[in-house]
Image 1 (tube, one colour):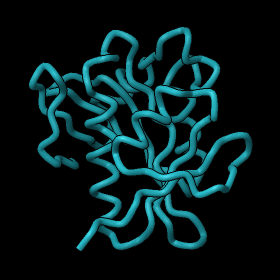
Image 2 (cartoon, helix red, strand yellow):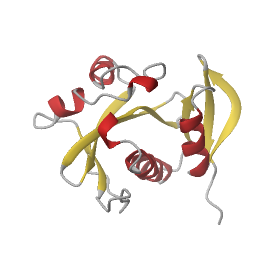
Image 3 (cartoon, rainbow, N blue to C red):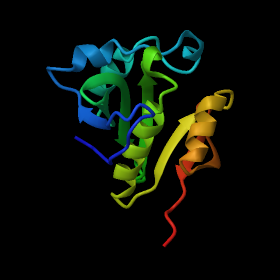
Length: 157
C-alpha cells in the first residue's frame, strides 16, 4: 500500500493498493464521466488489460478509506524516468479531491526513487492540465502521441 497521508475533501484517507484477487472487479468497473471519454476509456478494465499485456505498466487501485474509487498506473521508461498513466476516477467520486490525492500520493512515491516523474495529457483536457500544474508538473515541450508531456519540478532544497 502507498499511503502519503493524503485525504479527499470529505476527509477520507486516499491510498494506492495493488490490484489483487479481492479488488480487481471493482477496479475494472471504474467508469469516468461521459464527457471524459475523449481522453480515457469507458472502463478501467482497459488499463488492467494493458498492464497484464505489458512489462512496462503496473496498475494500482485507488481507495478512499476502504472503497475502490479509481485506477492509476505507473511505469518506468527506457531512460529510467517514472511515468504516471491511466488514471480514471469513478464518475460518482469526481470533484471530491480523490484524483488530486491519488496523483500527489503516486508522484511523491515515484519522486522518492530519485528519477524524473512524468505524465502526459491531451492539450484540450483543461481539468487535467489544471490539476497537474497545481501539483508541480511543468510541460517539457515534448509530445507523446497527441499528448503534452509534463515533468514534476524537482523539490527545492
